Amino acid sequence: MRLLKTLMMSAAAVVCLAGAANAQDKELKSVGISVGLLGNPFFVATIKGIEDRAREINPDVQITSVSADYDLNKQVSQIDNFIAAGVDIIMLNAVDDKAIAPAVMRAKNAGIVVAAFDVSAPGADVTVMTDNVAAGQKACQYIVDQLKGEGNVAIIKGPSSSSLNDRFRGCSDVFKANEKITVVSDDQNGQGSREGGLEVMQGLLTRFQDLDAVFGANDPMALGAQLAAKQLNRTNLIITGVDGAPDTEQSLSDPNSLVKASASQDPYTMAGQALDLGYEVFQGKTPEQATVLIEPKLITAENLGEYQGWTAKR
Image 1: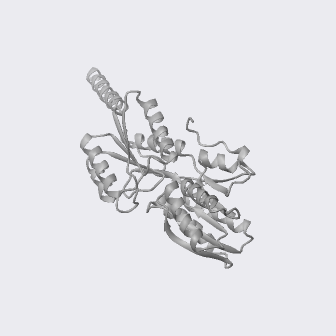
Image 2 (image 1 turned 30 degrees about the vertical axis):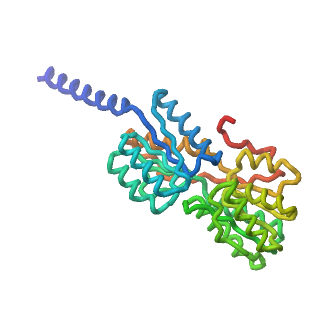
């Protein structure tokens, strides 16, 4: 009887060990990445962060990266293609923080983990992003402080993603709290790109000769706005953005820069952390935090020497 009991306990132990081994042996074979715009160095850094972390987990993992070009229909098709290919994890930078929901649900119904980064996506298993409301607040409080609470300002918006919308909201709240700050324009979409920021800024400077400052919801739009201002020989403007991108570091180091501040992000680390959390879900675990917000820091010419920059290899 004792022998039988011992054998049963041993068998149970083997089953438990086998189950643990199977859980540990669940191999990450493929990852699909869809970002807003590959022409933006920020997204290049996010892809690098995901690739490096995924290959630490499995050197042979298959990784497919695609650019949605801020086109919702294009991104939906990309997600459907990832579903058809049977990837293990979809790393998603949603170009529309609401309309992407049905595509996310299709992926989850197919048993695929969806990890959102930089931008929230309804139904995603995990999300890692900058506290974008705080980023907008910090970049626009800098403007208010430099203008001593009085002046004409404009906001260059981006496509309808949660990150850009949150920055817009944070900035708008700061301006509204200062009654002598006049927002002359806040409805122009710079498409998240340098070219879009250039085009919008050209129109703003044509319409508003007394414009004092501009907030671009990301660094490419802010840098595009600077280019337009310089083309029109406007040197008395304050421009701020969000990202802390390498090009912005270079601009801040120039004494003649019109870009005066940027609320920084770390895209490489952010996206890599999102992959880590997604991998936990893939292994059947529940992360301690399904949503992680990273606090931004305001970078200016004064503290540029202390800024570590993006951790992606350059």
